[in-house]
Length: 278
Ligand SMILES: Cc1cc2nc3c(=O)[nH]c(=O)nc-3n(C[C@H](O)[C@H](O)[C@H](O)COP(=O)(O)OP(=O)(O)OC[C@H]3O[C@@H](n4cnc5c(N)ncnc54)[C@H](O)[C@@H]3O)c2cc1C
Image (cartoon, rainbow, N blue to C red; front, side, top):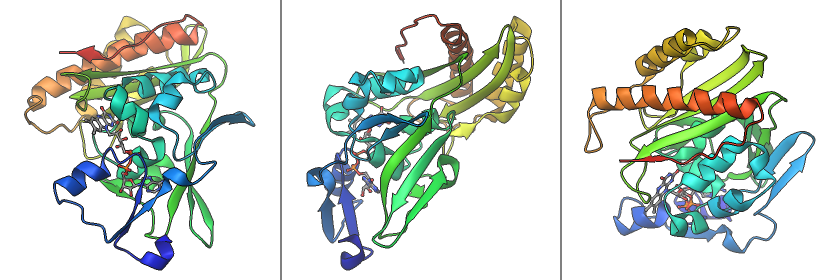
């Protein structure tokens, strides 16, 4: 139908981004192609060492899924998005397609080996999330393609992750957020991925912060170096949620907490994560 209806047609998933935009007349599609009645598009499956999410899987289904909880940072993300109403309707596919700089999924999935599968009537393409999100509100899909699946490799043993956001209240997007995924070998950080959310046009991979920890013993000193590098990597805008300095400070403290929880989880500790509310 997308191929038939042309450029001006839009897919409708949970409607939690598209419908508000249509109400504001920022989006004015000629046709809506409703995915909600397409069977077999909502699932969480484990297969060949990866978790696979159907495009129409709601945030709430992921929050409640014991399979998704095998990657705890994924549960942190799903459980922290907005409020119950939004989580009951909004989908992982819609969130990634929207590429909202304040959206939670891209920040979290950037710290994992995540692949977006894109389907048109003619072919399937698979791409890394970093290649799928091109810019703020811009993805790599052509007009006749849709996200058909999101696949995430289950991290190796000795890994742990945490996602934390700072919010004024549940139904608003975060002021800043940080995702940390770490693999430990005893006291040494074997590998780490750190992504920052809401402080740039897309989620930002804090590469210098990762380098401060990778291959090192995780001590107060190396954590402080990672925090400093994460603050420097942020590119926040001053707005009603806070000034540039305020957001940089926030990012630093979220990364610090994230490292602590990720390490504890990597050691096998069960740690509950909740976002921080102003
Ligand atoms: C009050 C409120 C608070 C919110 N707070 C947060 C928050 O804190 N964190 C957060 O991450 N999000 C938040 N959201 C957004 C929410 O997570 C949405 O679910 C998400 O952005 C879009 O998903 P959707 O399924 O509703 O997509 P829709 O609104 O239906 O679609 C969004 C866009 O994606 C396209 N699309 C949908 N599905 C596909 C697909 N399979 N393939 C290709 N394109 C597709 C549509 O054409 C459209 O352009 C909030 C929304 C509201 C209303």
